[in-house]
Image (tube, rainbow over all chains, first blue to last red; front, top):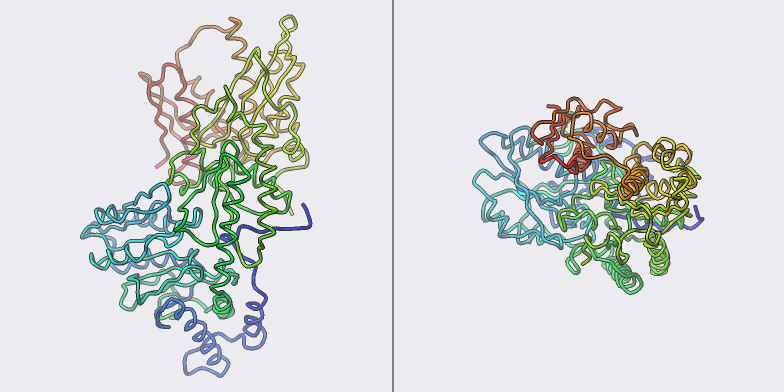
Length: 398
Length: 211
């Protein structure tokens, strides 16, 4: 390990901003009371107000009313609540169906898998080579029995951003509920529920230099949703459990600290990363959409080499990234996103995801590219692929 | 901080021995698994008189444990007779490296197979192997011994994942003692199929999971 660390896995977690911690501190040491009913004691009433302020701020960032936003423990819980809560509210019989894209993140995919066992039929939308769904295919899958469409806003791995305005319109016309997982776009790409027809939106603070363990769900007024965890009557009776007030305050503060300038700075890092890699390293493929993509995400396949080998070498230089390689995953399966956009293991095998955040710099990007160039060259030297007369003939490189 | 790889593994990963290929080798083989994605090529030269491996090289398209095992296996095999080299096991390679994480067994076992296949390739070229035999339950089980159970770092036969094997009219049916929704089910299924589909008289491979 080296002294220096360069963290480029900001889609997985982010460094907390000191200002966020400062904003949270009073909720731990000064007024640590839990929010009480309006007939409670002073500290409880104060806590109630603090929570309401945080809620109002976050809801406003979505263009929503305060009572349309509930706090959860993070995006996993939010997506679980969206899918299972709708199914529970509307019932799972009568051939009811849901539609998801094949590249949804695990909270959505695995919630749907559980619902399938309970009687909901799930249709999976294909994506094209750049990760975009096809709106006509969505229309062809919509049936009278379809109760919910769940299509993410920005992809967790390849960064492709879907046209949720068009999807929302289609859902409105067909009177189907629409949930979007905005874990990776919230704060980075604008979403306004006054302009876009969306009924449920999953968000989280952990991708925004906020605390881990706090997220939320936008629930448009009138959306049929049942709570899935039983307990008290918190969060408009949709999410039981003691409110995470420090988390909520931290989430609101984290959102407050994001500026348009910062998003442009992240995008400049992304563009530089991609441009420099393409300039300095041969045989690479950009994964995801070239333009319609998260400002903070670059995902590149380095052909003929394996991702875990790359990440391990990078780790020795203090650089943290992630890969879609099967060798890196907990289930030993190649990334389902990489398989959906290309359908081949080779592209997943050598794919590296770089995600940028507030604490990264252009200088770091240059160092990472130079380090990568060396590592890729070394690994390719020992690879049986890509050599004349070698086994490379059956490997297609875009 | 607990790192999944020990210093010996990391050293071989950083500075792999005997990397590259041999021009016109006496034996060569590429083992690969699209399920994991890793591939290893092994090249050997054999002393005709002593039947000892005089030179050996390897190439790897794989993760750290794949590269490290490729490196150690070339060191272990060099100078050994073909019979001795054939009997080098994954366990011995793993021990020579001071231990590998169980979950990485399936990536690193490829190097061991690469060596065996390169020897087989040499033997086939020199008329040292017998004719084709029909696939039996025993052969299927033997092949499944190359599919690793990522939970244990041992193969799926040794860890009792294989409940039943049936071979009939070119169709192999394997019942696996895991629910289909298990974390590793998809990976095990893909790898098992791949191991069996190459058998010369097999038309179809069906992998079934517990209900």
